[in-house]
Length: 416
Image (cartoon, rainbow, N blue to C red; front, side, top):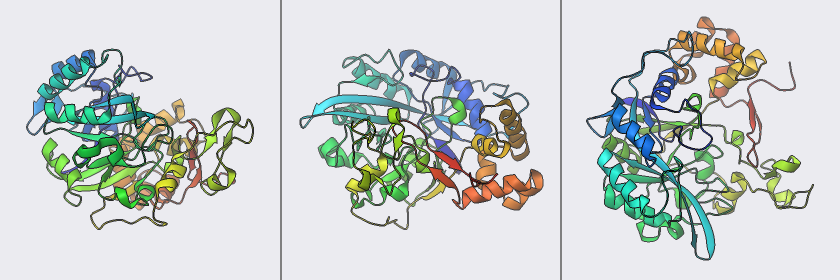
């Protein structure tokens, strides 16, 4: 079965998330986007876990579906095509601990196939720290020990290090990460077979590092509001069940077909910079300008591009024949915002977004599947040209830095 999966989300019980981050909200927006499988996020939070148990029913193979899908959509007047959207039990944990003389701050994703596994994991973690206060709790726990707990409580489950290049909280982050994955997981490294790229990196960057060739690279939205679902996602063509998904990640070329990527420059930690002073550097400048802010003489926040370059041992990326394709996309609301000349959250864009979804069935059906000439015929010449330019990666890019998103423009910003 061909399906689209976004496996990193957060519930309304995580900090800085929308109140619409509930199961009905996720389901509605999965229909609009055209997503078949969503991570539930936050299964360690007791209130959210109770909602998962009461509202979801297991289906054969370790996935779940809503017992009573909502009848109304999230946007007035929108009529997406029906997508049989399911859920997969997932959570993100923040491990802050000291190892080899340094404080480490690592975020990891856990995936399990059943409620019993969650109950066992939560019981173990509750003895270590407070998992009740936030959907993504912070634990003073070595991430290797977290992996041990997962394997003991759910032998079928698996862990994926999250957004592995984010400066502050990730496996390879410049502020608190490691240089080698073995330094983090030691003798349990063999149980890690996939890494999450994060919004500020893509496979083309990561395949500059030969030591990471053995890992599959997944991409997810890490969304804190349901309308951001699918800004990054994964395309599978395999059995629609937990075991088949896991096997396809462990064995490239067996059903993990592609990732849907942000343009990495759009990510808010792509380049070196200092938000307070408005200082940022292009990828070409980062090794020329140094690591100190020219305005205030304080250290810059070092971006993903620099960190990847520090660990790279190749000048060009190398892809195996089994490597999933990378498909770079811009969210449809951003496309319409540029075309209409108004903000992406404006009523004008929302109205046009609803119309476009009604015409094409879902956002991903338009962005990925619809022929350009058909887009031009059904909607407009300009939308067809815009989608064609995105598919060919012929876009204009300004870099994100120090927590500020970059900007990707389809049409020349210097021409009206």
